[in-house]
Image (cartoon, rainbow, N blue to C red):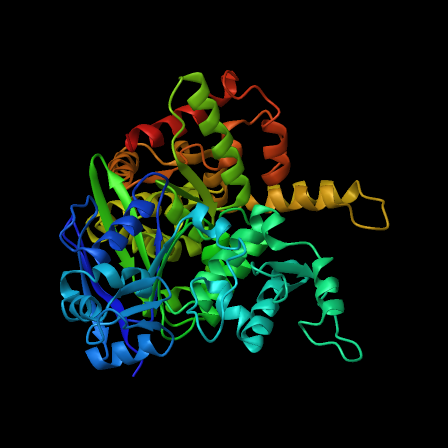
Length: 565
């Protein structure tokens, strides 16, 4: 049996304990500077010595597979055994290990206290710097008389492994990766089109080695290539049971980060437990695109001086990723921010984001770590809120006034934000019924007259889009709610309906649900006549910090900021 060590349980200082499987991919996410990288460092330290002090991770529980004899047999199968000075207790020299047999046995037997000298053999913590130097040519070794000391040595002695690894590299950079076995005292890796041996050539023929020597060397290339290979070398090629990688997406372009995530999710050896700390939505989507059933997400946030930990288990992640909205949008990028503000449309996001920046600049505020996302209309908002809430993301929702028209999705939005919909429902009904009963702005004859006037003025062979919009606008006036959306809360009848709206609106704000009281986005600047993207394009040309007409918009966004201070 091949011996293994893995992390069975992580205990966090804030009280949460998470049990892990031995072949899982554990992805730490969260905003900047909350402790993702620190968590990896502390897990790495606890693997070596469980008694070390830490800030976020209070303890880790290790488990192992295999007996002492299995460990010694496995190590000796690739080690240099030096028994000259002590035949009964020889020194075993192999990959990241050079100790007496008794010391190795003792560390294995007492693994619950940390694996000390065995850490380098069974686990590796790969920093951003470490992955860049991982591709530097190691010293060449004798396959018979020396043990591997570097991941490149595994490629050097295994042709099939080298070819498979080159395929990974080719997917990302559209070129081959070739180990130079004839370079002398060093073993460099080259990149380019793999030469085809001709005639009597083999891979160590002088003429063939010269062809390889003419190709660029990997360690002299950009950081993107070196980082990509460094991560895969340590995750896929070495014999580690546990690999910890800080920011695997570092130095990579977004498509390469996504590809790396997908490769890791699909191709990671079954006998490996991988810990990752990432701040890349592209890498995250790549991991999830892989369809792996073994991905666990742990989100870290910091509130004041206290860390907050939450997790999404593999089964929960797979259920979420079935939703096309989450797969094909940037919704999950919200887990990397302190706060997410959910809007109905992309136009809403653009406008409110610009107003937020104007408020920050005008009031000399620190720029908040807010992300605006949209979900293509009101009816998807509850699902997005539910998904992000599972990862403890702080959420605000901005809805146009007509969200009050239907219990679905309003009730579900309120519940998913943590509100008590049953308590608010009676007051909401009073508001809705009052608007439902309001007389439309125009009688039927008035609507017919307005539409006929539009039609009578058209002589074009192709019906003009502008006139179609005018007719659509006339029809909208028939519905009380369509008109209410245009004018907002001022459409609510006075008395009890207005009083009840004020009450429920106050409760909505407590759970970070903000109703646009001017009706809809365009109500913040009525001097511009367009709608949607065209309206936004025009309004963004204004001086957003000081434009008088946009004061209500600035006040609206400022309230959202202050509500989360």
